Image (cartoon, rainbow, N blue to C red; front, top):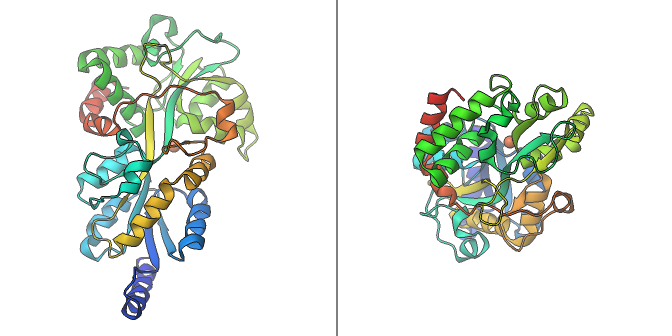
Length: 339
Ligand code: FE
């Protein structure tokens, strides 16, 4: 693959020699699955004439980028979750990018302080409850998961997964470390079983009567509802979704991101920036979010009808950068409490 990208790059350099405009291919390193981004990349090419080439992998791209160093063909990195965005940032793999378009399209709390990474879609970590065993309104806040009435009734994936670590970091940000640790201790006490499986596995466990409440990323509800695997339709039907912390005085539901950054050693930063700006514009935003049951970061992006049908909700406005900064103490609490 590396070879193919390199040879593609050779062609780009040749093209550049003829016309000193920007290169005609943007090389994308993507943790996002091809079906999620291909329609958008095609639309970008149609609009600008700039081609894209995607190297897709769910693991090891940051390490690869690091070892390629200055010779890396990568121009743009697409990934999910602030933990991964900040890993690229910490490893010094992203370029600082100044763009009025990105600043206008993406609210400040959804991009990095130093303009290295930019959110492209939002997901919320929500509570799901058994339709059969939990009356609506019985649980309203993430904090409630630690209350004694939920003893033996909660399922989650392991705390050290990046989704839970980000949630833990948000609790530290809002309540301080001591209170956050108390919450995690009581949550672990309330678990119906040892933390295991992915987010969908928790919904399956509710369906099977193993537990009554769980925490999942909102888009998994859509993925299960429309899954090719019909068993998952039943899992989705077994739950109600609850956007937590919606009270008038409350902070809103925890938010995480998918996002992107321009590779530090990109030879093609101008075209990479055009692609990034394109992805942040309202039209692309609507599609980018809709395909994965996520929410646009651009306030002018359209929320899909499916998501509208789940209800509007208030979002926690905590800067996502803060979540990245608190990931260490969050992981420390997770280790200490055995979540
Ligand atoms: Fe996920």
